[in-house]
Length: 79
Image (cartoon, rainbow, N blue to C red; front, side):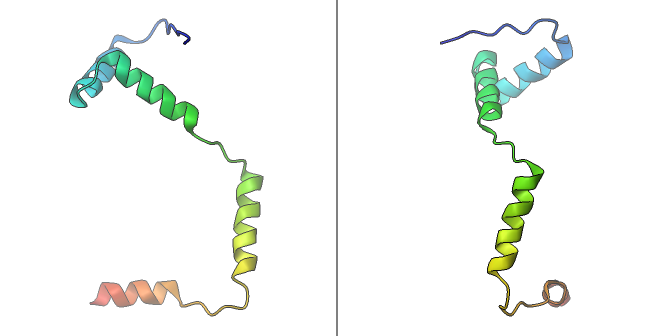
């Protein structure tokens, strides 16, 4: 397994991360490992991919009846 050194972190950042780790019952190293693992697992979606996905959904719903979302919200709010 690799190691990473992050230099020149502001003391306030370190203190905040230590406090965060303590609140979660983890060591600073454990908290940092979890933060980095989650950040690395995030999937970046290009806008063109998101638009294509939305278009596919829109096409799959063509011709189907849809209720008016605003009317449903208003009705729920009025109860």
